[in-house]
Image 1: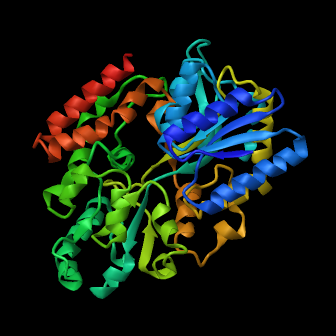
Image 2: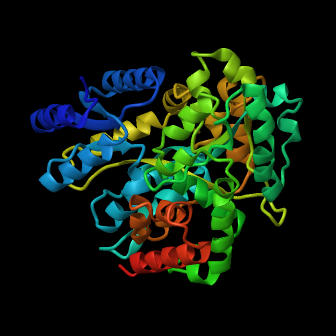
Image 3: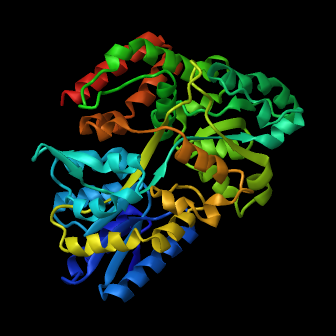
Length: 445
């Protein structure tokens, strides 16, 4: 049985019934509602196939992005948890902390026998520390991943006699290029409010975190070491340089002023409305949104390109966010939840499910990429997608190594540092020092 809970109030009522009324043999699942109906339809097919094969009745509910973690926290507080929960925001807000606090079931018995199927970064991201045992183990299921992509209006560049092939591949020149084209494109478009860059600059957008982390990687900023200790102060100058580079489009007035108030969807909206020439985005949602709505935009007008090399010329390291499903301690049907994940991990199940996202998410299993969907050489976006995930170095976020970094994410301390500079006219040095102190305080617990 499926329960669709679009909003939190509806979800609180409907899923409360689901947890309380489930019989011992039932499996209660709370899952993140996708952005595309194709993805939800595939998940529904997987549930029905699982029920038919196992005889287990699955009672599942779908929640939108923001509600999934809120529901999970409420369930933990009430002591009435589902058997299995999945949220796109879990890893970025809670998973490592839940593991440390002993709130998650160890799922090594599922992952260990199939660990050779996964990309190393996927397993590293769910190998989390349990504060009660003092040991690391697998406390979450990796399902899919996201990283930061860059999208450019190739059609606009053509109007001024250029193309994406003219975009420099070196760091400073790459960002300056878009600012340099702004004046001519304002004349071509007739829009005096057209901007070369569409970079989030707010503490309201998690995209600010994701994109600044790429800038931090470009300047070799290190936040914590492998033991989870703060080392950011040792990289103070690199942090200052990364902040200077990040806010450059604001200083040169080639980034929309309203970006200081953007939420996560606003860079998408401004780009698709051709207010900006380029924008970074932590998924392929921008081209995916055009796949059916405007095929010409998808195939021709919008280009997806790689990030430039570091200022020193080395290839940039991509930040990877591994989406996680978890089993909470106190779940009524732990074995049923594990059996469902084993079933989901079968290539004929999880493969089509991820393809239903139209490329928004990327698999965490290399074998799933060897399909016509991902190997379509005529698709201009998936080709770059494959390159970024399969041929470039990747790092997980710092909270994988220390759950105490999580408040830096949830508070958007990075967005606040950016805001200090672009809104309050702080120096990058002062903003960097405040961010260093906040990170050190957070990691001290």
